[in-house]
Length: 382
Image (cartoon, rainbow, N blue to C red; front, top):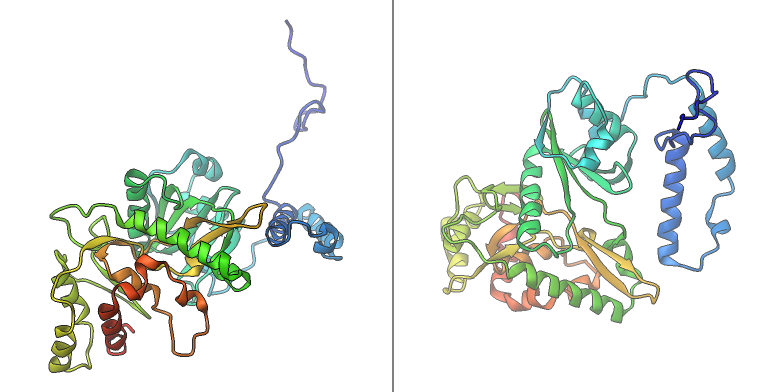
């Protein structure tokens, strides 16, 4: 059978074909942002009136963005210095550090310079998170299903290794799935799956007591599963890829040599002060329990901002993912509860600390927890 020939002039889309939608125009990205705002609003109130949620300026805004898209493109305006993208340059050497998923490869398309393709992708993406510290870490939604975490390369390694380890050894655990790693200059870009939902930090203040306790119970079960991962014999503590032990407070200390048991880990913690006397350090150290703690798999930064939740049609909230695994690895069993209260201050009024998952509550490890609270004020990274 003869194929039908198009009568459309060269360079034009035939009338019987659908032109591929361009999701990267200013107007398209504006609509996507509006749509995501509506989605978040409907998660809070499924019966909300959509007309009330849309800004009265929406039609005019969309029209102006469409007109801007129709004008010839200009040189992009410079990014502010607190935006990590301002630190990335098309001339920087770029390499694929970990295999890219087919979905991410499709997003990047065909390119002559990998760095230019990545920078263009980030420029067209939605900012999901920006670190309070200038240009140290940002997270972008680069497509409907993929996010990119951009930070110094050494911070990416532990998180990538952990997510890979979880996919192999605890595949049902709700953590982001990997899409690859790209290195540009000093920076690493960790691509993972986008998790639909809200972070618990935003949701917690409006939950009732029953809902809060439900979240705490769910977290308890998940973290018990995480802690059930066996500690491989003859393996150093810390990151599963041999990245060493980290003690993150205001700053991060990293062990300068491999730590092979809990006693060596506590040596590392109790050598972190430049002001405490040798006698005072020995005195506090002598109060630690004599029996060595077990070594278990630890997230290292469990807090509401790193817990993603979603509400169902009946109004119940479910933990759908735990994110941000930079501080994870095998650590003493009390370490998770110490890190969960890093941000607790005497003036804090957040009842999150009263409803911590039971198996990780400081009530389970009161001596280690209290000693760390006293020792914390002496540490150089505190």
